[in-house]
Image 1: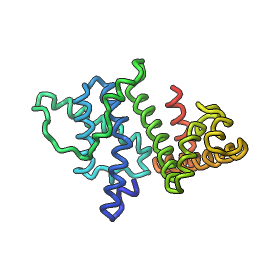
Image 2: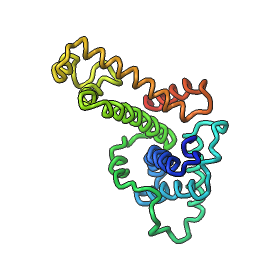
Image 3: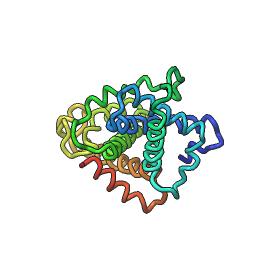
Length: 227
């Protein structure tokens, strides 16, 4: 959010696009679970971000007003209510997209969502949590890619160990694939996990008002994933 408010318009545009991409699918899922069809959910999500830009609403999302994910969902609910009230008006069509989202096949992803009794709010939180974790992995991968082909290769092999002790590979298999000893492989995994935790806390800290809120938000994230 601080990056979005930077005076450098190019930096702000990059930060804003990253923000929209991070929250686009969680909001789309919320709209779908509320009963909107694929096209309508896509239009509503796109319209929401368009309004955030044109109304400069993001500048009202100060840390003092609470969690950013909560602010965003509350704002999206208001839009859904307003659109419902205008249901008899002519449906929007032919609008230009705020951002290019061709690489985000939201409906294909939504078809894989479990058909359970999960509330729209919980599903939104779950997809927010998963999106945040995916972003952490992407940042870590970018760091490794930038340090040369060897570290990039190591990351591709060892990323299965980031979240659990037993991945699809054993340490012995991973060591063989990388041409390292098992001890050296465990050391690399330890450093990757350490950096993963650091980036994870950084990402969480960007979404809360105060440093002391980080732990509570981490608990909320894992509760959402476990629900």
